Amino acid sequence: MPHRRPPPTEPLPDDEPCYVISIASRLVGLHQQTLRYYERAGLIRPHRTSGNIRMYSNADIHRIRQAQRLIEELGVNLAGVEVVLRMSDQLRTLQAELDKVKAELDTLRRTRLPAPAIDSEGRPAR
Image (cartoon, rainbow, N blue to C red; front, side):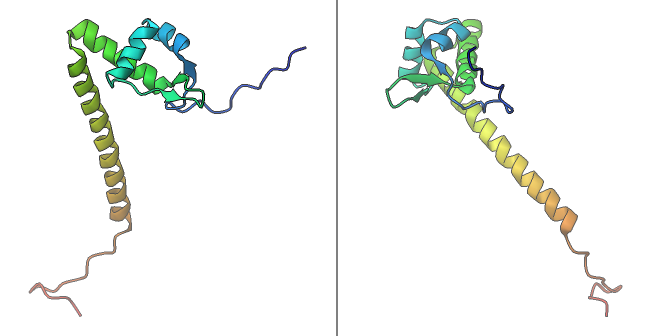
């Protein structure tokens, strides 16, 4: 009886390389050469194994699908796709930073000290 691995207890992170180019091309419905071209154009950067084999993550697959939509549905050229994807990445980064700052601000608001008492003339009360 073959040994079966137990199912993973946690899902793979989106940036975990897990697909070789043949599987990635099937997932997105593109020829392998198109994926290589997208890599040369700078749209995707698949991970490379020590044997120089391209490995694609779920994030790479998502990025390829975004590029496909921009090209096929909106008629954007590859240079435009690169700009849109880069700006989308920057927007996600900035949103994450904003969320972090908001969380820090909320923490500070919950832990701030009460304001000192002042008298009717605006001076600290004694």
